[in-house]
Length: 382
Image 1 (cartoon, rainbow, N blue to C red):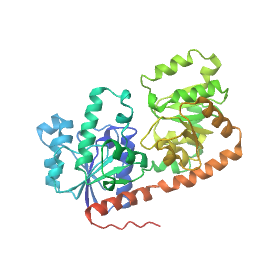
Image 2 (cartoon, helix red, strand yellow):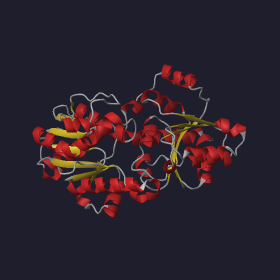
Image 3 (cartoon, rainbow, N blue to C red):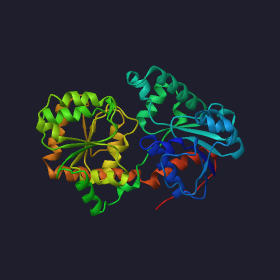
Image 4 (cartoon, rainbow, N blue to C red):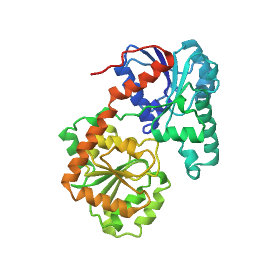
């Protein structure tokens, strides 16, 4: 089978859609190396290196394509697809080229979420308009729309009127490094290099309004939880709200909140392993990969009620109202105050995370490819 991917995010985004794209490509090339994988990349000067195995990269060749990479990705790529003749073209990040409906290949798009429709106030009007045009086009011309959660599937049906029988839910996995034991020297390096406290609560994610980190900070302060919070992620304008809140707190409490920029996965897994509990108070997500990373690392999770969070967190996580700092504080006290509860949550989390391994995710994706093309691969793993 010859499978083409929109690989822009794989080579240009460090987190989020980039992780999804890299993991999908890596999982498939490892588990099904007999296929031919074509990675369509709009620019040669890439930002993110990763091992894409047996796949090969394809860049714009025309003068126009080289000068206008976004235009190539959305329009000019069709002539390249006509030449390469893949059985499938898979848009990994919510988009398909305009005009691809005239191509003979099967079209698949992964749509991660419709947050720009659910929470329009978080986006600029021009961005909402652009997203709606791109998402709607992709959902319309695709033979199959892959949703990363049942929540996203429901939103696709409700907001974009995508027929249910056109949607397949394929959960994403996380980088296998989080399933592996972390060498003691890396744990020690993380603790000393970042001067980590002996015990701490961990948050991982962009520090933005939707992800609601301020709730966790309020829970610690107002609930008198004395364990420090380490927040890893890129800051946005929302950070000003956090600074404003902290300005009214005691100097002692301010020292309890530690902010760190994004880390490579090798170091990030050490933070998960060292943390006593992971908090993810987001209001809404397409799936919530950091939750799965924490579970796979053997870290108990406290996250939000509703949205897709129970799909990512499973039965062993605790769920709180993302608008209620008292609930968050009570959940933190319950986990931090009972080693037996922590151990139970860790065991249940590891068991749940085992359903999201590379092999299982790759098999689920390949099953969709088989369905849409009629071409069979061996999809059995021990």
